Length: 236
Image (cartoon, rainbow, N blue to C red; front, top):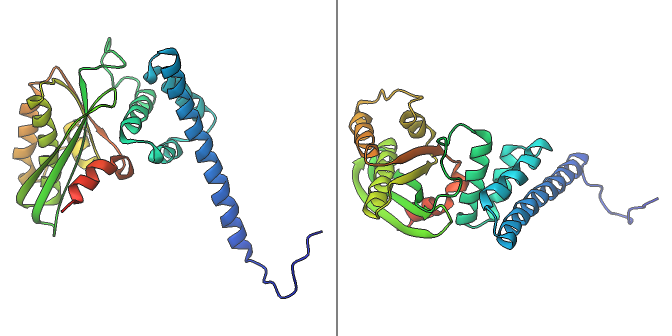
């Protein structure tokens, strides 16, 4: 039987519960991260598809009850390039019809663009950025554009336009845009209608630019998975 030293205070039961839950969560996230890293190592060792190895690992994790949110949280410690690979594999598992039939799982000609934007105050002077990666994780470039007086949603649209134009200027015609603005992503996917008059011209501009691509899609990502673009956007 464990006896506390004389004069020692007993921690509140709620604190002990919180500590236990934190330790358990940390252990779970560690297991998830180990599985993800093991999948990428196997792909590199045997020269197989990282996408397929990650899909198998993520499928096992999801079936074991790990949950999408915990998988995303575990990925925070990975590099942006590795996060992109994991997110792509996770998205294809959760949305199996999102890829075109016959599309290669790893496409060296496809660009993954992370965008972010903001204005201070809202509305006010704005800035938007785009970080472009090839699907294999190699960085193509980082782009930043100063904006005039805009609203936050206008700035986010400008960020998507910057990503699209930068991709075209780099000679690519296959693009996946990832943004932490769920509103814009749903509008561009056709799930939401654009009601705000100030956004209609920007929406139309994106739709026009989309015609110049062989393949393009828009994906919502939580802000924590968009850290690099967010950091570039906030830089003075």
